[in-house]
Length: 401
Ligand SMILES: C[S@@+](CC[C@H](N)C(=O)[O-])C[C@H]1O[C@@H](n2cnc3c(N)ncnc32)[C@H](O)[C@@H]1O
Image 1: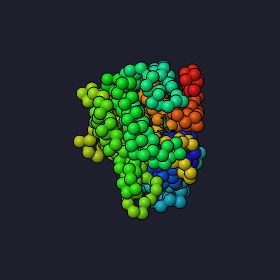
Image 2 (image 1 turned 180 degrees about the vertical axis):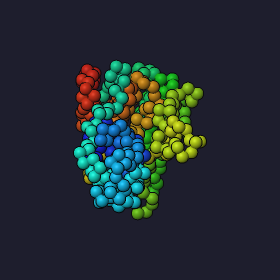
Image 3 (image 1 turned 60 degrees about the vertical axis):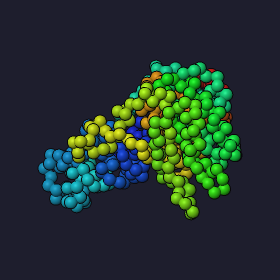
Image 4 (image 1 turned 120 degrees about the vertical axis):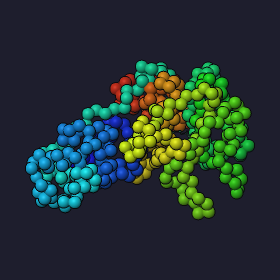
């Protein structure tokens, strides 16, 4: 019996990247990768089987996999010694397995000895909840345009949530090389469009890095944005730190491994926040009865692996150099908007915000000025519609111009 191919298959059916699955069950992406190679620990395997709902040898989901090994052994009337002889595993290893501990390879050996014909049943089709946007919001727009011009033409109060990451002036292929004054002027032009198009209970989630303001000074972009956002009437609710691994290593200062989210609202007395929809379920609830059984608050420090290419590339990676991880945007969208709300990303890039909105039953408007990135976003959304057995909505075609 081999678990690895079934795990990979079920994960892909669930349209989850290794990073997303890892995030969902509270392990590292490497642990998921290892499990998909048939290596790694039983603990990870059990979490994956439970999360993806893969039946094992005809049994329901696998939280008590270890106890089942024990039950199968006893049903056969085998002692630990006998299973050890048949499986070439040591008795302590089998004891560990029966308590849900040990390695996936040992489990496979025990099952092969106990039930030589056992198979992992083909996983039930596990899909994310059918996107409510299919029958919900009809606003599904990928727009090829300059966002400032586009937003100036939008209706007032037509957007419930803005999630975006503007150019940082950090030398990326899509960035013009601006002086700090020019950058602030660009920032002001797009920021000034937001309050008018936001609904009264609307919010802006703005992801920023840092900017070189002189030969010697590097400044968090939030320092430049905050006075502008305040001037245009938005209220800063919170800063959230996004932590990730990987990236350039510096020799003369600490390497950057974080970016910031600025969470701003139009009305601090009336904004959308669904904490229960984004609680973190990885907490060991049984260990402490003071813990909320619905899961813990994800706090203002988030770890989401960056979307990377090359070896070990994320499944969601496109040719865009700076993609958001979908799982991170899904957290923001679920927490800070309602089903069928409209989510805008003025700097839409590869369309990640649109993907996250679509998958969570929200409408989307994603604006991108670069033709190549616009095409990437279009292809992504079309693929998603197809995977969900739906025709691309007509306005994806009509408005994608
Ligand atoms: C940081 S990237 C956004 C990446 C995006 N979050 C994703 O997940 O793919 C910023 C994007 O803004 C686009 N952009 C820059 N200026 C723009 C403008 N005036 N209007 C619309 N898009 C613009 C760039 O081409 C780039 O794709």
